[in-house]
Image (cartoon, rainbow, N blue to C red):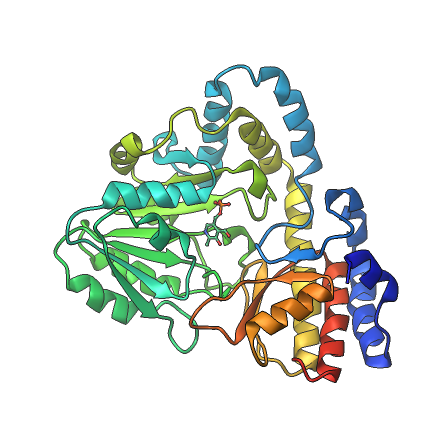
Length: 382
Ligand SMILES: Cc1ncc(COP(=O)(O)O)c(C=O)c1O
């Protein structure tokens, strides 16, 4: 069914209507999130994209203006905007300008790190499941891949990762995705730090903080301090998530100046591209957009977690812009039924194939999705 048709048809039923109305009414009472929704920003007839952890708000209005104005300079190499962004990040993060390097999305920072640290006999140690790009980008290099299942509470299993790291004397990479994609869960920062303190500097801690800005657990903190103190820690950040710039491709690494130098032959010069750079600077100065982005995401999560709670469906605690919840039956069937109902939901993440990763849309999208879930329950599909 086309999305518009689905919206028109709607789904009724007392429980369903109540569920959708309550959270939205609560949201609008405190803050009008619907004003953030511009229907021109997506194809009305297509399914709602809840599959790629994108930010549904669209880029900040200030970033849009900056990009349009920035076109006047698009014929020039982007040195000036690179310096401006570096200065801004350096000031906000409390790191030296020489500790920053840019990439076309944070995946480029991951790729550069993997390429620069490669050595014969080195290990690439990562959780299962976790973000797949690090193992994918390591393919041309002689890493021995070591996957370590998450613990029963969905943290990286640091004890086992440490045991695996001890087995190689060659430079290795310890990849931490914190919060983790696809589970949305966080790993104890105390435990990561304890390991960083003790580990030899030939092993690289590659710490992916793509969802840092969305995490609000009091025990969660960034690892930037270690990227300043130690040459074997790289912190990876992106403008794709809270700043809604996934299509503009801009990420950055934070590392010791010596590590930035060491990585230099692997990075692309003239980064960031001018338009991504002006959008990033404008976005970082747009506190209202940042707050809207966090609030919209929290509200969307609240709506869907309420629905999953009412349906007694297991859901993992999320510190990101997606939630992982249990499904019944085959994931492929579930995804197809969701698609028919007007929603694109996440791909398989082995070994968690009886779970679905659901990226947050607008709160109103999640209210409609909640109705669909209620309907699925009536059909015994969920
Ligand atoms: C953990 C993690 N790291 C990095 C990325 C890639 O982001 P970017 O768009 O900055 O390349 C993603 C994207 O979903 C992600 O989940």
